Length: 405
Length: 119
Image 1: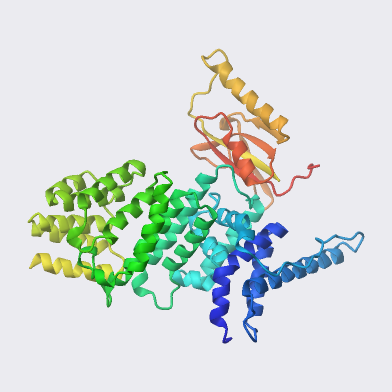
Image 2: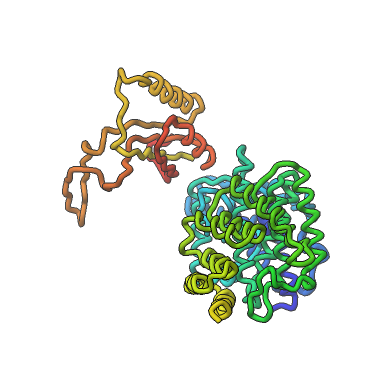
């Protein structure tokens, strides 16, 4: 253990992805670049002092390790081929010490697009993005997703093998906006996982912070992509409210949250990001969700919430990105705006959510409001049976007791 | 790189025959597609297969061969034809595969690990 562990971790997270992207582009070999960065980070464990320019240090050392690895591989091949002819190595050049943000623009974007390539399955996209772009270690990612380390390592190895053998390129495709959509889906999944598991944070890597960091890096790459900014704003609103979502290990619903504990600087930042997204005038699903989040975040009390506006935003979202979960949220917003019976009528038309605990939880709450405690308790019990998160289970137990009394 | 494109089709689909309305246009779209592969330097080989009733499979177990009637996998989707193409990378291969004038099909794109006659 080095006294600089924290500095090395920070270096891995903040610069690992950039350096890997540059080297992968330079040598045209993702695996080599990854191994070289890992070698360099291991070497950082024997630091006697933190270098003045850690990013430059990482790039220089990783570059040299990559050249060493190529040289060793070439020597190996020469031995095997009985030295009948010489293999020429890439011309060795002194790497630049300083890496500027502007230098890593395209390489970084290429790496993110590669990790989220549709030819990889979703789990592999998530793991690769966190590992290669986010600079997280395999054990950190495994712990964050509660999967065995060996499973995650295997997932990454398989994905890297497919990238190499199927010829998935490090390039910026002509259909960029479609591919960026896939990246946003991955970043949103990472964010959601972090948001749902935040109660049990502790030793786990904070996936909310990681997804915000990655989304914000993507936003600086694609400053005129409104949906990237929309997702960033959505994530920032969520983070600004997280401190009030739990009291001890008890889940607190939005309307009961202590709004004085919200991070107002975070909300202001989210407001600015959302405003710049909307100014681009390219509507999208993430922007709509961020706009809905902004209505909650900027309401001083739960009673100040503009539910009719939120209900109509959900109606727009339902048109843009139809899904039963959005239909459920819309029904809840309509119930808040026009009363529980109106919401229940909409809920009756939502299909495909029989196994979704929040459907039954929402149904139970609306039935309780509509004055049907027996049906409410039955729906809440069904929600309780389906809920996996312990904090949600405890919350539902309390609600079942409350409506049944 | 080289890729093989497996064209999976459901055999129950009606096959268009010469003289059917739209047959000439349909064939012309495939000819144009093939010409595009040739002109772009992507063409290595390809062909349409007879239906799976004509397939015969040699199954070798512990060195002993049994010849059986039928394809090696009975599935709803069957291999109806194939292409072997050259493409810079998977993105280009996927774009070329997506250019086929099918209305319904599944196209599996697999990199070729090695081809003895590759020049």
